[in-house]
Length: 286
Length: 348
Image (tube, rainbow over all chains, first blue to last red; front, top):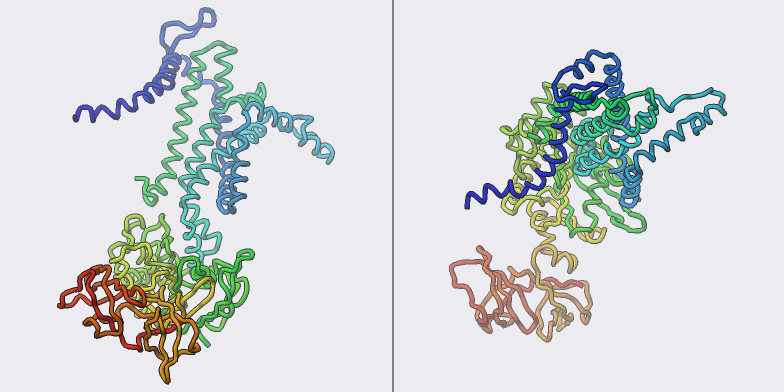
């Protein structure tokens, strides 16, 4: 009896574990192995192992530049999403019934359109014949070049990522006792102090998970930097793509992918640590 | 001039009138309860006093100053919410001290006052706990301490005890009343629980569909309810319809052909009226010795009392009798019923 009891959880979760192992762990392990394989431009991947790819990445300024660009673009995207998403989620949560669901739908609507289509849409708007440049030209402000710059990537990323920021914040706002704000007001707190001292600390978990999602997805974004960054403006994901499909240097591509994963994890975990320490005790996330 | 005055205060949500021309004067130090069934406008009235709901018409004055359109964060009233609305990310101490902090009270003074406030509600040992680590009754007391620490001119309590179990609620009623007496704060409580309203307040304000229907001291309210609704809402009552009949100098009410003597009323003889009689004012007596005979159809044991349902010629009456040393009556037993004509009320 006790035997079946202890096996049951394993058996029940076996399908999920199998899926996880087959589709995530195995390819990742294979990628990790691949990154240590020797590569030769004439003969391809060899069955020998080396650290050359890692040494190559860590000693080449080009890769530093790509990684640095990737992370600052992801950070700025996250920052803008925070600045826009937090007030937007708050306003959404304070809306009355019919409007709230309508606007929530509008917030989610971008997710219904393919990223590629959206990227092309932005390239139309931001290009030399796009509406922004046309306005600038008619106002005699000269040409503004947005397409194929970091800012084109950031604008499009913010557009794509905003729902991922708003949804977790909105969820934590839903859990807020509506009386709490009135309680703060009755204790002579100004509306701003109420937001800062009472509302904000309680939605911090939502803000934290929202920014982690946005940062992670932005740092590994591929379609948007590929289409709006152009050929010269590389982010890590597009460099990985190039190594695999243009250079056919799979081991170097695998190395870059793994370093991106590690760097991403490092940034996210330390961010999590810093913020978590602040709210962990009070919110009962023991 | 009363301390807190509501003059013709009305509240409309669109075309719906939720509070209809409410007039209320509360004296300094008084404990007043707004009592009514849900949806009667009592909570809206409290929210208008607090400033969370706009007043559509009328005015509210506090200590001679018009506060009708003052922002809630400048009214300085203490409020205890039904959900307690404690700040979950702050300790008990931080919760209680929040109001002082917002008033820029210096830290040492603040610490002393917080300690005093927590002592008042017997929570000295819990100052470092978070609200989620407290029981319902303790949270309730934190909310009370947080509201009282700012020394508000008026303390507003919105169904503060409704989330507590029956036993704890009774204890908290006592404690609430005692704290209110110690501090002397003018208090307005909103509740739908008539026993709570009667046990702790100086005056009870009964509200029904947006209007005040009676304001009285608890005893007077119970003894002389002014409508059938209040009779049934406040305590238990037997209500029977009948006709007023004058026989010489005496007025009586005839129910299903049975006449009962009653006191004078503004109602005319010959008109239809209701007789109201509290179950505990009826005494069981020997058969044919009382005002009417009846047969017991059901009995309920309530511990300190027996509740009998007695079928009579005039209709079914509820009778409450103390569980004293005498043996209780059996179901189907015939009995006589009697009462003093002064305990009978005639209502339109």
